[in-house]
Image (cartoon, rainbow, N blue to C red):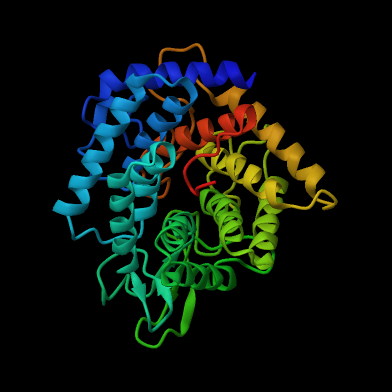
Length: 375
């Protein structure tokens, strides 16, 4: 089952190289990425690069490598020409592009670019609150004190930079932000806030909120998914058992709140009706994250069986019920949601959903693990 799904996905990626040209997919518009490509401007651009590198590793076909290398050059231009990037998503952008090239080919220019990107992410560190600011410039009256659960997936860029350069500061900042996220984004029942505010001048906690969830106190499923995978990665780099335990707790909550077909709705607290939107991308992230989590759990851990079963059920459902296998399509997974509250692509292809879906498949079939860390 997994190999058929991988082969179909790689075929679609091959077709998309010509379809997309120098454009970058973000979210589908009426079932087509090509209806609204961008010139490497979105926070999601790295996922297209990551898909190309995954396809190259799987096939060893230079067509994928050539396209992937072109994206790395585009990311070089983006970092050097647009020094005003005012968000935390540097890890999403450069781990799957430049760092991927370094991991696969040991290209020194790609390594140098990745370290530059890590330095850029370090400028988001706010010493007063000891966190990485999610959005907006320093001192922004609305965003200056906000952290976001998505940022856990950007921290591996800093951990990698620490290991690669020998400078411990990158890793110390990443681990400090992960611990703050554990304390304030994860609630007592193992659900999570999407974002949390601090007083940007004193660092005092203010309270949790959402940007894309159903309401401030609800659990946005994609945010919970970022937590499952992100805390497992922080454990990989730090060995802090609290991060592993937090990943497991978030995973158990996610799996226990899934509907009968084992693929998430867009929020765990939204009233479920026939018209309620799914978010296949959240389940794809969790399927990749569960494999990271299971790699670290001891063999005797009492939750391994249930977590493994949840992974299998969700992956089978994604492949059987949500994937575009055998269809003419630009996307790999149907029924992802970007921003339901904002009315932005509530039910379409999501390029990050496609990336994590293929990463999860390749982990299952071949042990290829993506580019969040260097083995």
